[in-house]
Length: 112
Length: 114
Image (cartoon, rainbow over all chains, first blue to last red; front, side):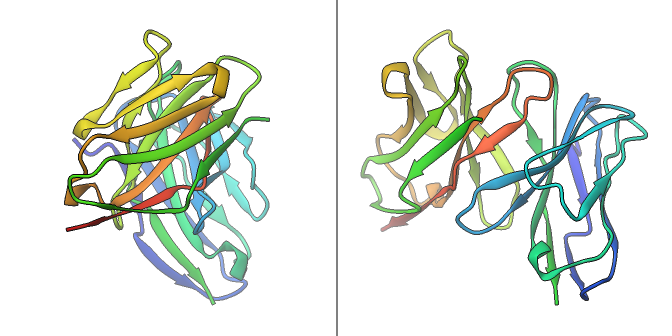
């Protein structure tokens, strides 16, 4: 019963480097999300997707890109890492309607 | 735009005492409301959600929340705190479909003293 799986769990990047945060879910959920969590700020939505081939910006999309080629996978790409992107990143998924979101364990990213 | 305010970023309670976490929201439509809990170094998991079937909602681990439309509030309570309740708690409001996008409050970290 895997749910939402994120890799890696931890990563240190140098300024200007790029990386992809991986997210996969095995619940056949249509909706998937990327949030970032900063202390005292709650979680902010970066990007979301309502189905394969469909993505849209959230509240804080600058510096990130996503793709959704399959129902299961929703990778988040950082092209030119900046210190402001130091955060904990959570992927989540849900079904349509008033349903709960299921969260991964998070990726702690530090940009130095 | 929707917003959520959680009053108090840190709450300290004694074991066995009442836990009260405050949440106020703004929404132009009837909201979908949630409380999530985050244990250290883990993701978020659902405590409870408001479904409009009842204003008093019961969740897991003895928590409950009351929806008060007139006060735009959805406060979370537990009559008797346990050491295992030490965690961070997030109130969230969701858009209707499409998307179910969550807007979170800033979170309240609960410390339970023996």
